Length: 288
Length: 287
Image: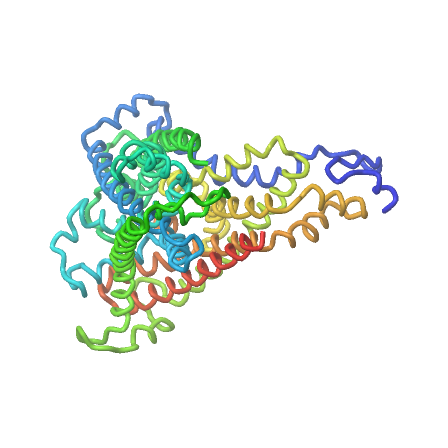
């Protein structure tokens, strides 16, 4: 048997003639089947159901319900929270990333902050809301922030806790990509630190910064657990209203509310992520 | 300038030194800036965790110390919700099942694509990263009908693993892709094949052992993800750890057991992810 196959290279299909050869792509069928059932099918169901009435007939006019003042309110709430947490997360994250990047590249501090960022960027959800509740909530250990339950400020602060580390992870490679020679060249031409950042560093980092901000925006948009554990009586943002709509069929009577809101979110995320991809490509031009 | 020279990106000769005084001043200013930033952000990140740890040690009256919150983890039960320990068990089992299914689904597929069906590589990458852009809450809405069907056969919360595998795909994919690109898959496969190995042993006994660190990374990320998942369990009306904590805190706000369990779960997840960053660093260091 060994003799029969020694002449064949591993990368080629072995046509030993012992059995009819099966096309190689058959090996990927389990993966595609799984993804089709648990990823593509649910997404398809959302899109189709959003365009149907509860009684099953097509109703493309449902889309116009996204302009309904009630629905619009949740999207505005989502936008407020996402804007606040992504912009503040991006600004503070960029500052932290710069502080990390300007240190020793093999130093303990850098390693510590990168590891911690990897951990904390994942740490959202119920436990994060608990942690802030006991820090600055009504019985807070540090102090009681009277704005703790204000939307979007209280929850926005909680969101920055996982947005800043994500920004560090995403933005650090861009800062590392700033070449020493650019700084030296501008200094040799007599520029001040401000001029360097205004005319060289800033413009170079701008696409990467904006792209990272959009990524943070999408990240905040899909977060649900944190805000649900923070305040579950009032629905401020789209995911909360989807949750309410799923558990109680009230609201816009002739529309599949949850599906429609979900479709709206998919559209929003698609726009944001397209922008992110475009900016990433732009950023890659200089920062290699 | 000192800021950027220390990055050591470029192989060219170091530039001529600037006047000593100026560089020293800039370095001092930069260092002051860095220490302030590190302190402020360090406090911001550590304080909520400390507060939670402190609350987990709270006794019956405010300000007292007690271990009861930690002792209650094993026995806590509240009316109307399943016991805490069962939720912990379910979550750990879910983590194991999800890890196994993710690996069984992804590792052979990715190796196979690398070796035999390169033209599918882009499609698979796109599909694997897609869950990053489809919010879990959207997925839940579409999963409703599918889980109705699943619940005909089993009501167990373990059935959540079907969708958790999807959530884990992007993280597992990126970890595995990094591992695969670090080894010469084609040569290994050709060598094994020419010695008479079947495709099964090429994948399981030759290539997979060569990327065990990437596999470990994928495992840890997947486990961490399952431990922290709330949205899908909550909306499909299953009870996992996060949902249980949420339910307890709704029933009895400020129950110290909530904070002790949260702290324990967090420490566990941190440990997993720190192992990961250690393993990842070692691989980069060697390669």
